[in-house]
Amino acid sequence: MGKIVSLMNHKGGVGKTTSAINIGAGLVELGKRVLLIDLDPQANLTISLGISRQRITIYEAIRGESELVPFKVKENMDVVTSNLDLSSAEMELINEAGREYILKELLEPLREEYDYIIIDCPPSLGLLTLNALTSSDVVYIPLQTEFLALQGLAKIKQVIDKVRFRLNKDLEIGGVIATMYDARKVLNRDVVDTIRKYFGEKVFETLIRDNVALAEAPAQRKDIFDYSRNSSGAEDYLALCHEILIRTNGALVNA
Image 1 (cartoon, rainbow, N blue to C red):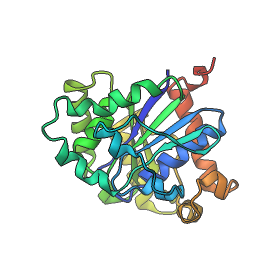
Image 2: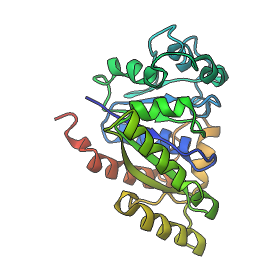
Image 3: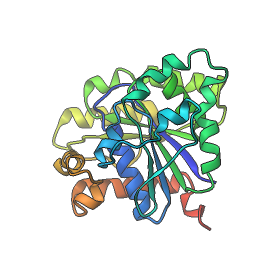
């Protein structure tokens, strides 16, 4: 049965969508079958992979009009796409019974088809993010190595703890991903030290270095491995995926 992973941070611009795409692509490089879920109304993941608007998206599925319909991006990597219509979902579902469990029910039939299901959460702590956390086995927190990125850490942990207590007792913080790291900057090094004090061994050893190829890849509608396989961005995300496999016993998935 596949692992369901949410990438969550209510602060935008921390590398969340970049990490969702490239962790997915990295796991594919390591022989895994991956489904990406674009749960953000901005549809940045969908756009970054060059997927045109689909007739059935995550919005129609959450409204109960369809099952999830994955779009094949490449071998062993599929995407459930999003679009701006999703922005109205929270208001439309406000009176729906069991509204926090809608995504969980949609994902259940797909868990046997994939080794990893990766959810790119919106940069908010609303109903869509609650659905993702309720569905997930683990949550990864991408965190830009800048001072302001530290300010929301307590709130993120508080939300995860509440979801664990009320909605999903098995939810765990699977790891913190330090992004946009430049070892030459004292501030970046200090931020990494701070998050390691706060989260301890939850922080991944791999630091995602600031790398122009990671910014260029979405403009070419590619993941980092298809765009620049020899870049430091590809090197870092592949190393991160090795860590993820170790932490989730991923090497055993196909055994």
